Image 1 (cartoon, rainbow, N blue to C red):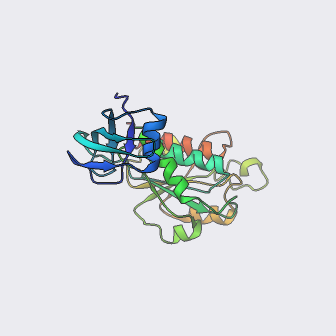
Image 2 (cartoon, rainbow, N blue to C red):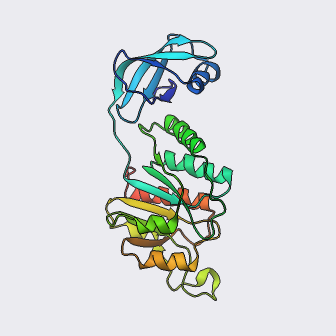
Image 3 (cartoon, rainbow, N blue to C red):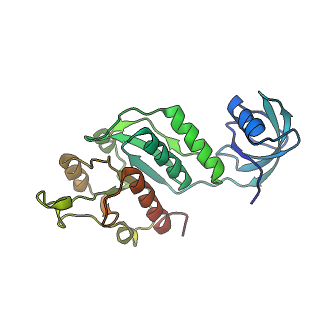
Length: 254
C-alpha cells in the first residue's frame, strides 16, 4: 500500500491536468504532511478512479498538483443507506466517520419523537466524511442528506428498498425491554438468506423509538425488525455494529 498522501479533489481528473488545491488541502499537504514540490500524491474525485499526481507548486498558503497516470479504476460501495437520529455532537461525528469507513452510500439524519437534536452542520459532516474516505481508500464520498422527520421519510420511501429496523423492544410493556414477545430476530440470522437488494439500516435515538413509530415501522412490508444482541447499545455503537454485520453478510466484505 502506498504511503503517499491521499486527497479527494472535486474536479475532473485526467493525465496532465493541473489542479489547484483548496486552502485546507494545501495546508494539510504542505504544513501537516510536510510535502514539498516534486512529491507524489494520490487523488480521487468519486467519478474517475484514483490517480497519481505530483506537487507542482508549494507554499505555506497555496499548492497545486499535476495529474499523472490513473492507478485504480472507479468503483462504488454497496447500495446501503444509514438512517440515524442525531445525538450529541461528538457521537454524531463518530457515526458520520465510521459510516463512511464502513462503506455506506448515503447518510440520512432523521428526527424522531425522542431525538435529542434536530440540528446538523452539513459542512462539518462533509468534512468528516471527506477525511474518512481519504484515509480508508474509498474511491467516493457518501451522499449526506439534509435532516428530515422520520414520518416524512417513510411517507416517501421506495418499496424496493428494504429497511433493516434495529428494534430492541418487545410488545410487553410491563416487562424489561418490553419482554420477549415481538422482539426482532438477530440481525445476522435475518440477513442469512437476504441477498443484496437496495437496503437501509435504521438506528433510533438513545431513548429508543416511540410506540407509535415502532408500530408504524413494523406494519410496513419492506421493514425487517432485528436485534443487535442481549445488551442495549448506545446509538453510535449500534450504528457501527449493524453496519459491520450487514457488510459481512450482504456487502463487500464477502
